[in-house]
Image (cartoon, helix red, strand yellow):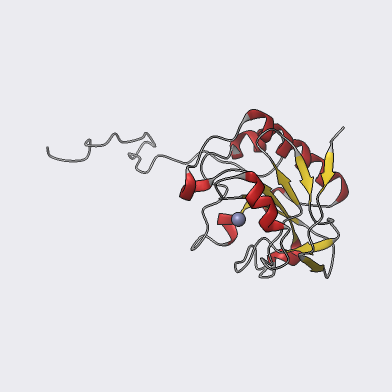
Length: 183
Ligand SMILES: [Zn+2]
């Protein structure tokens, strides 16, 4: 059973329909408590539906039926109001600016449980479980390369494919660096 604690944020408004997208973030601040405080500060005008701390604690800040303010400017599959379409999950991590580090196992387990739980309530296609950086690649990096998308996909959530080698020969075999030159 998923344990979720309520920590309400005033930073939300109304959706225009049911959510059908999930956006994953990292908090990108040095400490969890300051990130959570900011997401609940009416002056900051930012929020997310959930925050998952490094020990696996899950906080609910905004009800899933409401429109939280986490995605900002960007688009995915033609949707430009990503806040209206999505549920946002903030994963506690200092991020690239303040010392990006591995997501602990307990935290990832909690994120996966939360995603499974959310998908029992809403119809969210795998191609719409995305990173903040997917919808705003020009200005966002989160949740970043340490997030285990491959593991998530192996458990049935989201999409993953192995990158192909950058160069292949006529028979489809990878070319090692230096193979193509005269030396
Ligand atoms: Zn983000």
